Image (cartoon, rainbow, N blue to C red; front, side, top):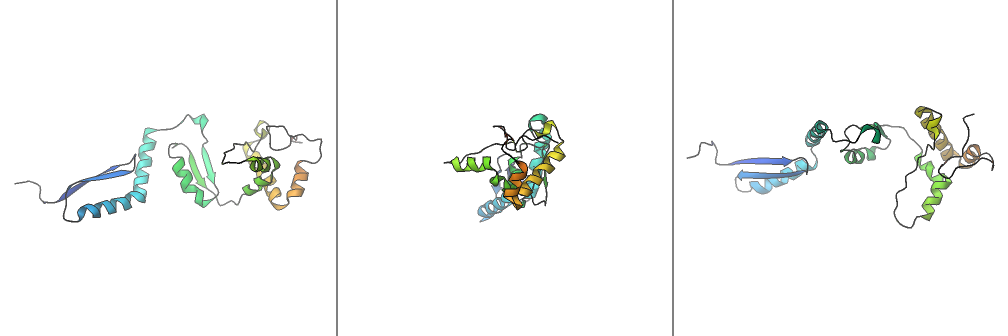
Length: 186
């Protein structure tokens, strides 16, 4: 005679690290596929598991040193927020914020240096560019960002006039590791 009050019972375990689940016990006929189907649905889209996983991860403080990662990332496309959040799960100190700004980043493709790189490519490749060049040496990050947005908007609206403003004559030199011509702040 068992002291357990019911002839059926199930214990369900969830592994948050590997996003797996398992159940053990005595169930009624048809309970096993029902539990498996329900748990698959729960594991697929349950925000409570995501929050719990995040709390555990932040508690463990799995992160790189502060100087090797940005403090915050601003996402300008709604469709990029969730994928970026998934990619940055291992970096709990990085704050992800959404923004409704309509930034003209497609204008980057009109920059000759980027266009040349795209035309040379024969297979999928990733390139890393510092689009700010070395502006941080002489101006603040806010001014740097504002200047970049102003130039990209100009390229987006009127490509030829913007190129004439940025590079007024042939005497202005663009260094090999820079994207923009080397102009002074004056």
